[in-house]
Length: 279
Image (cartoon, rainbow, N blue to C red):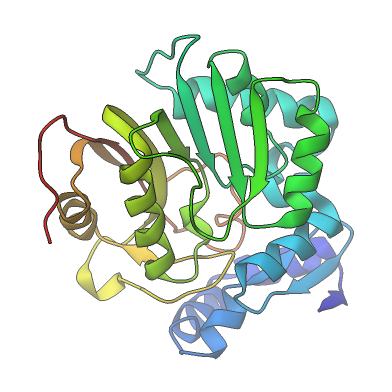
């Protein structure tokens, strides 16, 4: 559903401290919270009233303004948008990681291909997935000349052989997941497809205390998990935790636009060579 409003006025209203405090409480309501946490705005003044359904909501955002939906901070021009993909890949996704020209890479939540394009120049094969058919269509258009990139719609699975991937990433993706079950599903799939020694980098909205944990949310402002929960999930999935750090910033700023106090956990996990998964 789409409504029209003055974008700058709406943004100012949402950022007002009293409004933020009320919204923060309402977002924990089982049904209303899902809708409030799925509300998105775009620069032409429209309000997209998401329903908490990943495919439907992100298809609508892709049709309305795909660049803004993917990276609201750098969507003012094509040049800025695609340059931001190269920048974020280098500074955030591949920080401390060196890919070879033979590596197989999986991207979960590829959007329009903002990261898949620069990844193609660094990897042997890039498998890019997104839940939104419209995002996938746009990404396929952008990458059609890149022979080492495949882009396809996912239903939550990664249709690749076990132990076949060197590096997996989900950049600014899990921060929009409305249910922790879906996050766990992708963590398990990443473990399955990664080779022993393979790495998985992702970020997610962080809860500083157990009282802030939120396991059911929306498709803009997603679930909130604690560092302890992530550590426990890594062990359950079979991963080793290489890095888990807090950051008040997220380059996409999609969540920050209406939740300036949001903080993020940035994780780098490794699939060990010989560690059995916990049952």
